[in-house]
Amino acid sequence: MTWRDAYLQQAWSDFKLYQDLNANGYPLCHQLHYLQMTTEKLAKGFQCPIGSGPYPMTHIPRFFLRIWDSFFFQGPIVDLNLISPAFLALYSGRCGA
Image (cartoon, rainbow, N blue to C red):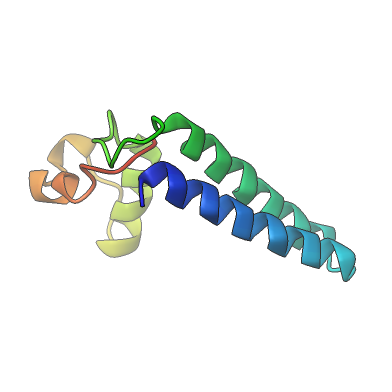
């Protein structure tokens, strides 16, 4: 399965859950969360070339790195230039930004 296929399959799953939440009268905030997840995964899926396998990310969102650092290192947000190359290598080969 390519990254494109995986994102589109996840988008379909999220959309079905959105429809279920909507049909059963769940709070709008929960419905909108799954609708947002659907659109984000659709966008990422369509970013991936058709028929291609995984390809390297061109960048890692700086916001993500700042959040990751604060959650897992329990300290203040550090200079992003100090992020370990080994940590960055974990995210190579991912599709999307």
